[in-house]
Structure formats: structure tokens, C-alpha cells
Length: 298
Image 1 (cartoon, rainbow, N blue to C red):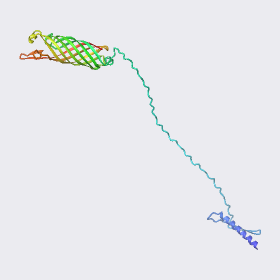
Image 2 (image 1 turned 30 degrees about the horizontal axis):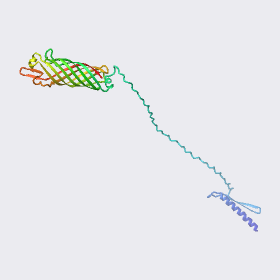
Image 3 (image 1 turned 90 degrees about the vertical axis):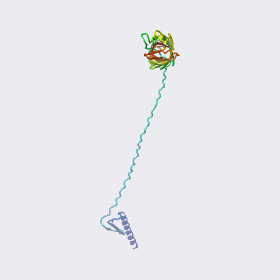
Image 4 (image 1 turned 45 degrees about the horizontal axis):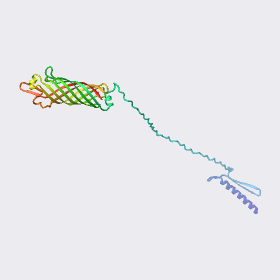
């Protein structure tokens, strides 16, 4: 009897365990349809089935293998490199020019002959000259003469001149006259770079004259001769033609005005003019001289 009870208990326990296992395969919140209870005692079997049909077998789904996605590799873009352009200075070699000696020819200018060859030039010259005072009568008012000059050309544009002359002839009143003028002049050269140079003359001078009265003039002066002394100034224009470095020709015209300064200007005036009722006198005179000469430079 005890064996039968023990067998029944074991059979029921196995059935319950099988049902419990089956219940574990059902998803939560669902009703598994069907249950089967097997019993057997001593080889006599029986079964009890609850519900309809056979419970389906559980399906095991193999989980998919994980897919590893390779993250994209970063792409490094190299930034452009800016190179500052450099300026390269190449120093040129120094060239030395050896000056050639100056060759003087007939086409060389007077400035080169005088100024370039030497800073100072001293010249001596001679000239022939004539003077005109105007005058009374056919023979009045003209003198001729010669002279000598020293010219110091200390600058291409400037020169100082000293002249000494001697004139003979008849003066404004028709009297015979011999006169010695001395002048100091400043010469201004306007174009010293040319062979034919134009110059201006501005100067002062003194002069001494010996006069022989003739005819009515001797009666008017109550004497036959007299001596005059003058102080005056002159101005003019001239040309100098530089033929070579050391030789030139020149010509000029100079207007002068002067007055007597000797002791007899009151008692023996040089010029007289009577208008019937009165006599006018003066010791001031004016005229023009012209000269043509040659100059030698040293």
C-alpha cells in the first residue's frame, strides 16, 4: 500500500514539474493552451490532456552577428603655404672713366680757351680809334688816334680793362687839339662760350687836352692856346672774336660825357654861345669813340 502511494506521489510531482516547465516557455501575460498529465502505476499508464492540440515547440532564433562599422577616417587637408617674394638687389660694378686730355682745335669755344685752360687770363692789346664831338664848320669835331690796353679776364663773364690813348685832330670849335685819355672799364661778356663774344663796357676816365686857338677863337679867348683837364664816364657795346686760345680781335663803340675840372673853367670856358643880348658858356661836352684792335692773352 505504501509503495502505491509513493508511486502516485512521484507521478503527480513529475506532471507538475512538466507543466511548470511548459508554463515557463509561455510569454508573460499569455495563456498557453493545452496541458497533459501522464500517470502510471506499475507500468499501467494513462494520460490526461487539458485544452486542445499539442503545444508548439519553442523556436530559438540565432542572434545576428554584430556588425562593426568602421568610423570614417579624418581627412587632413594641408593648408597652402604663402611665400613672401623677396627682392634681390644686385649691385652693379663701379666703372671708372679715365678722362682724356683736352684737345684744343679751332672749333673749341673761347670759354674753354680761357676759362678751362686757366682760371685767369691776362691780355695786352693795341687799337686804332676815332672820336666825334659834332662841331662847327667843315673841319670841326673829329679826332683820330691809337692806344694800348691791358685786359684782366678774371672770370669768363667779366674782365677789367685799363686803356691809354692819344688823339689828334680838330675839336667842336675847329681848334687844333691833342688829347690823352686814360680810362678804367669793366667789361661784361654776355656769351663767353662762343668764339664771337658780345660784351658791354661801363667805365670812368680822365683826359688831358692841349688846344691851339685859331682865328676868331684866339681873339675871343684872348690867347692862342690852353690846357684842359676832364673827368667823365662812358658806356658802350663791343665784339671780341677769339681766333685762337691766345689771340683775339675786338671792336666797340663807346659814348662818353665829361666836364672840365682844371683851374680855368671860370675864366676861360671851352664853349661859348652868344644870342645878341647875352653870352652862354659851358665846360661840359659829349661824344662817341670807336676802336678796332687786337688782344694777346698770356
